Image 1 (cartoon, rainbow, N blue to C red):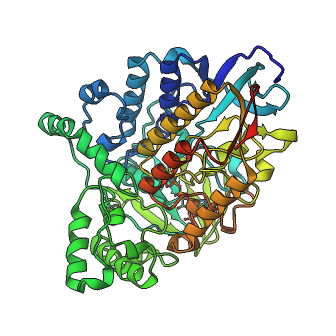
Image 2 (tube, rainbow, N blue to C red; image 1 turned 60 degrees about the horizontal axis):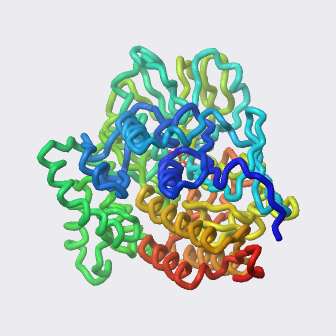
Length: 548
Ligand code: NA7
C-alpha cells in the first residue's frame, strides 16, 4: 500500500503560458484539484515577456489560436494575419477570463525545487515565497524559450545607460526618439526588433556575429469579411494544420527537386517569396532540408534577393550567411528588414571581424573602436528547451537530478516522460512532436494526450507512473536517428542545443532537442501508445503490481 498523506493538490502545473493555460482548462473541466504556479506577474509566457517592438507571430494568427472552443473561435477577431504581441497577450487573457481560469493561477510564484517523494508517490515543490506544496502530478509547461541568455562580456554592470534582454523589454513605454541604440543579435528576435525600431531611434547600430537567412513575412490586416470567411473555414484550417509536418497550412511541395526544371523551381520560389508566412520554408521542396546541393541552390536564390534589396554591396554580402544554408536553423520572418540597412541612421558592425571586447560605462568596445549608446538591447536568445528545467532543482527517484541526467542532452519517452522522474508530465517537452510544430497546434495534442493519460491513471487507481528505461532509450535513439538525414544537424542553433552564452553549450555539441518526424506521425504514435494501454509506462496502483 502507498502510505497516504494529504496532498495540497492533485496536480500542479508550472508555467501559465500557452500550454499551461490550456492544461489548467482541461484539469478544471475534470474538476481536479489543480493550480498553476507562474513566476511572472501575469499569464501568457512568451507573450507576457517579449514586449519588444516588432514582436509578433510568424504563424498565421488564426492557426495560432486555441481550437478547443467553437464559441471562442467565433468571438475572437484577429486583426492581422500575423498578430503582434499586445494583441496576442490580450487574447490569452481573454481566454483565461472567458473560461474563469485565473482562479486556478498563482502569479509571482517561482518554483525553486521539485523533489519526488518515492514513499508517498508525490512531488514536493518549494516555492520562492517559502511554501512547500505537495501534489501527485507535476506538469511542466515551462516554455521552450523562456530563459533569456546574455553574453558574458566584461564590464556589463558598468554601463550607465539602459541595457536589457529583449525578453525584459520594459513594460512601461520607452521613448526611443533621438536615442543611440545598440542591438546585439540577429536571430528571429533581433530581426523583428531591428526592423521595427530603425525609423524610431536616433542611431541604430546592429552588432551581428552571424547573419541569418530570412524572408518576407508579408503581413497584412484581416478585415471583418475575411475574418468571417476564416471562421467559416476553421474546421478546414485545423484539419490542414493536422495534416502537415509543421502544423501549418503550408504543405511541402511534393514534387522532387530534381524532377522539375530550374525554371519550375524558380517559379515556385518567386511565388513563395511573395506569399505570407512560412511557405518559403515549409512549402518548399523537401530536399532543401536534406540535400546539400538543393539547399545551396535555394540559398543562392535568397542571397540574390538580399543583394537586390540592400544598396551597399559590401553590406549586402555581410548579411548573407556563409556557414549554413537556408532553413537549417529556425527561419526568421521579416518586414522590410534588409531595407533598414539602406538608412543613414543604421550601421552594421560585423563582430565576427571586430569582436565586442567589453561593455564600457558609455557603450561598447570592439577590437576596432569604442561606441557610445543610450540603450543596449541584447537580442541574444535563450537557453532553449532544457534551460527552464535546469533552472529548477528537479530531483527524481533516489534524489537523481534531472540537470545531471540531461547534462549531455535530454532523454525522454515521447518527449513527455522521463525515466526516474515518475508522475512528471511534459505536454510539450524536449523531443516531443508538440514542441517542434506550430506551437498551439502541438500544445493541444500534447495537453489532450496528457489529460487522457491522467484520466486513465485515476480510473485505474494508480499512484505512480514512470517511463521504463527501455522505452526512454528507444525514443531518444529514434529522435537522434531522425537528425541523421537532416542538414540541421550540422547547424549551430538552438535546434541542436547551441548557445555560446551557456556553459557546456558553446561548441555546438549536438543535443537532440527536436522531434523531426512531423506532427501527423507524432500524433499517430501517441494514439498508438494510448491504445496499447500506455506501453512503455510502468503504472503502480495499490491494487495491481507494477507493470508496463
Ligand atoms: P536566436 O535565434 O538564438 O538568436 C540569437 C542571436 O544572438 C544570434 O544572432 C546570435 O548569433 C546572437 N548572439 C548570441 N550570443 C551572442 C554573443 N555572445 N555575442 C554576439 N551575438 C550573440 O534567438 P532569438 O531570440 O532571436 O530567437 C529565438 C526564437 O524565438 C526563434 O527561434 C523563434 O522561435 C522565436 P549567432 O547566430 O549565435 O552567431
